[in-house]
Amino acid sequence: MIDNLVDLLPTAPATVVVDGAEERNALVADRLAAALDPRVSVTAGPCWRESRPDALVWLRLLPGSADSPEHQADVVIDLHDPDWPVIRHVDARLAERTRWYLPESRAFFAVRAATWDAKFGDDLPAYAAAVAEAELPVGGTAIDVGCGTGRALPALLAAVGPTGLALGVDITPEMLAVAAERAAPLLLADARRLPLRDAVADGIFAAGLVAHLPDPTAGLRELARVTRPGGRLVIFHPSGRAALAARHGRPIRPDEPLSPGPLAASTANAGWRLDRYDDSAHHFLALATRV
View (cartoon, rainbow, N blue to C red):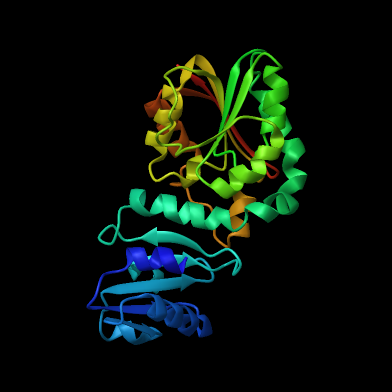
């Protein structure tokens, strides 16, 4: 996270203030100061209220209210789970999200790859049930985009059978190293620019992917490009949106990519027909067909 912040923050000379998390402000400020050019002044606490810095980094412990100083910050880091700090927002004047999306995502998942299955291994039956909903053809091609450690790959392999192909795609090498145990071919690639031919897939499985993409509509359009007409898209998460948001200490919002209205619009604009939307307590499942 510190390395990614260094890449995002203004170059020297500049002033940076870290605020929002009381005693943790000084810890992050000290680490930033050690990593940045010495000509960048890094301080902790509410001093920015008197003199606006070149960049305000807000450490978020709880969801901010409508009038929270968080909304004035240039960078917001979610510390709700102290073991999983996540950059949630970067002001466009510092960097477009398309620039920090890849390094932040890789940094986040790389250090968790080895323990991911131990933490979430109980989700395997839910993945198998979601794959079954796609009704993939035997002998067909299924692509798990954003496959992580490959939890859906066994079910996808079983669905397409020995004459079919199940391919796992992810941006994080460490995740793919764990997924290699699933006995399926793997590809290190960005979901937004898949090195695959047009209309090659009969089905796309996307677990926990769409909400993380910088531009969900563009990402869904790329998934549509590699899917044949009539092919299926499964957008899945083993937790419902409310449970997942609560885990991260925030409420769900109607403008989120997986909210009913935005997802209906983005799928339609990307070449999909949204056939089913199921946001239950125990999972999120949306099914779409390539038009």
